[in-house]
Length: 193
Image 1 (cartoon, rainbow, N blue to C red):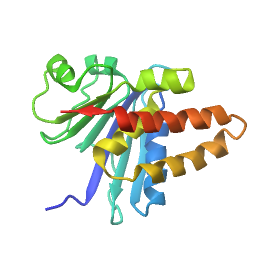
Image 2 (cartoon, rainbow, N blue to C red):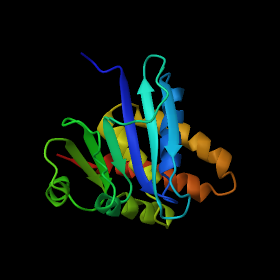
Image 3 (cartoon, rainbow, N blue to C red):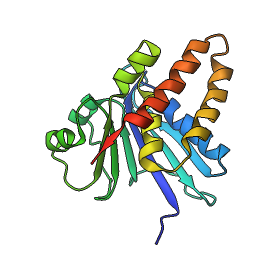
């Protein structure tokens, strides 16, 4: 049986853009005709505090209106969260983990003691430093998610994201181009096992 709804949980720290990544993913999904929900969950709202955001994606209307407790995919924007947050909570044995790190998936598996699950890694921080001049891993992680999940078409996501960023950063074309490059690079560079 094919699962009708896919749930994604984003883990990050305040200021890393987990909420923005979930919203950009949702906007792109909606633009491709999918039904979508995107919402954040905040603890203390301060820079560096752990935050979570969520997406639900379906080809049919979504009637569930509660938190995501059994995600199909977990995207981790900050490796240090794995020491204090159970980032794999509720993730099934065939679930997918995408993590921002220069480490390989097998190094992550060993370091975190994970068995089962599909693990993917991408140096989203390094990519964002290179393309944007600062460490904001959210758009590269979006690119990795698009590649790993196969849920959306990369060209449609890039086009939709460009439109959204043009509204917000009209006077900063370098930010728009940097984010588009970051998404594409992470899409091409994500590694899995």
